[in-house]
Image (cartoon, rainbow, N blue to C red; front, top):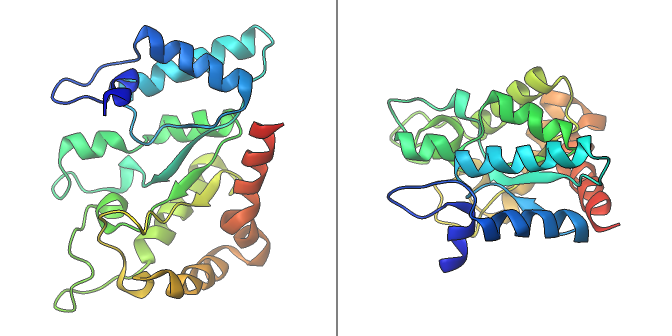
Amino acid sequence: PKESRLLGYERPAPSGLTNAGRLVVEWCQENGMIIDLVHATVQARYEIYAILDERKQAGKTVRPVVFSHTGVRALVSPDMINEEDRLVLPDTEELLKIKSYGGVLGMILMNYWQNGDNHQDSILISDKGIEPVINTMLYMKEVMGTVDHIAIGTDLDGFTHVPSDTKHVRYIDNLRQGIINAFGEADAQKICYTNAIRVLRQSWT
């Protein structure tokens, strides 16, 4: 779509923000529209961070930004996911950027973006189920020192290879139970819904 050009997301030569894109970022921050960074290029994302940092230094309102459905670049195998797709994922520095703005990163139920494996759901291959998703969350907690910026962004309506134990929304409780087992009840509540609700409230008020 033509609108994607605002974020530099036009192949084969992705770039940064256009002038219109910069105005859109400022408008969203002023008017409470949440900026989702998932399909922005790396260059565009860092230009957005620069705008937010400038707003913070100027004493202006800085609203949370998010990755609505993502994995983490450090955990995907370079041998199993191409470089272009790896760059879609945030790096470790970006996790800390999102934390600094009070945002969240929603973990996608997609094997390819969690550890680079596009065939985990095959019964002929050792199926790790939701383990890569949980492992990504644990890594994020280690990097950020908190679970306050971890959320769920299933993207189950997308063209994704999902873990076999969460292959349909009716199995989503398997994910919730896995999060409880890994983090405990209180942190699981944050990951499953209260972090996302906080971001919505901070953005819309």
